[in-house]
Length: 255
Image (cartoon, rainbow, N blue to C red; front, top):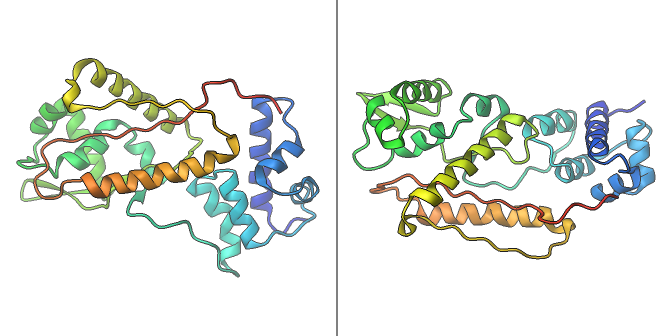
């Protein structure tokens, strides 16, 4: 009987998810993805092999578990052992529940908008600056206050949370919808905003799938550096969004 049922269950769910995408996906391919021998993976899935905290962390990282899944899997290990913590950065990562509440773009925009010079705390000003209705602006502000990300004092709005980033690789459809929304906003920006106020660049290259985790880490590091360099904390005038996508143009090969 497995002493790590949460890990066993999550691994099996992920394997089935990959198999649904490709019916020929094998346990051997799954083991290669994890960087663990096929025999060991089989034993873990069948509950016949104990797993160390270090290996559990590795599996979480390889399978890109979101924070909720990671907590479920690593929770039992934390009771008895020290589990490696993810690298610290200056961003607060939202939980799935928080993101569900503020997945629409205007919530994130408001958190930055309240920091610009001459910012006002009324919904009409926010609506005018973001091109949304007063009702949308009012509801968004209320949600942000309720979640403890924003506060209102003497008629002025103030962000009380650190810069925010969504959790990576959430399987929730809400996050996918939010990314689609960002792409739509980017399309309108490309067509309607003068080139001196925007920048669109693309690079196409051959890439080993095994290097995707490294590429993601580099993208996150760049975003942190970009934010640190360009966030104007003295007299900001506009709100910008930096959006980065990395995806295959060639069809993924069956394994």
